[in-house]
Image (cartoon, rainbow, N blue to C red; front, side, top):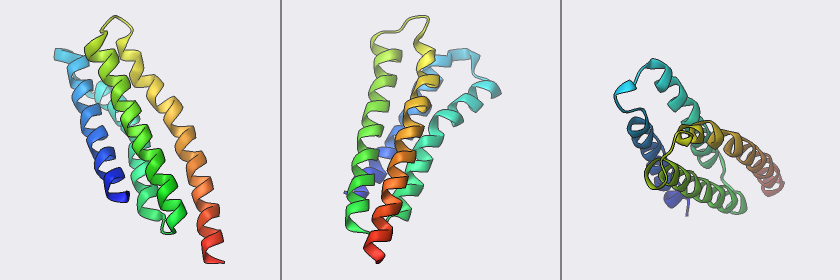
Length: 120
């Protein structure tokens, strides 16, 4: 399950870069690159969380959360950029981290207590 979470998270990072390049078109610049990195930071935090957890319950929890976040994030990008493009489609790059950061932080707190309990 951990390997699947790693793969899906890396694919979500690649998809985020791809959809950002499509969204920006010929207006790709350094500001756009900064926004892209802000959007993929939660994925990198999730990869760090997956690397850190060792106990079985924490691995299952972190893997499930990262699989769900990766799939939902990629779907949100696909839906707003490809399926239903409009003038506000670019706002998805600001909305994604807003819901992903708290979910990953809450998961990290739960994983921390699961790890502590597993050591005791």
